[in-house]
Length: 105
Image (cartoon, rainbow, N blue to C red; front, side, top):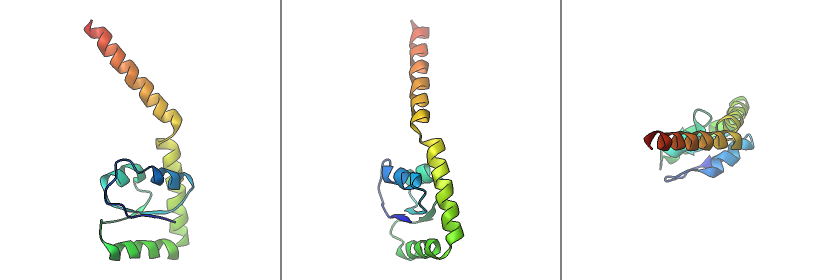
């Protein structure tokens, strides 16, 4: 299990690492965490220690849900955040920019 109680992030790389390791995650409900994790984690509001505790206990006490979240997290990181996908996105962006410049000449 990985617990991420951060209240301010740009791009939480450590979540990608936890996802790749097929680890169940409880994370702060902030936009960067939602963008990375999607529906593959338990969330709690920043500063809400009661819900944080409940999410941790839920993960500890429900093995099947913990395994399901971990499996989905790994699938998501492999599909959404691979080097191949990132490279393809850059490739497409560069060609789009180049084409736009060429059309304007």
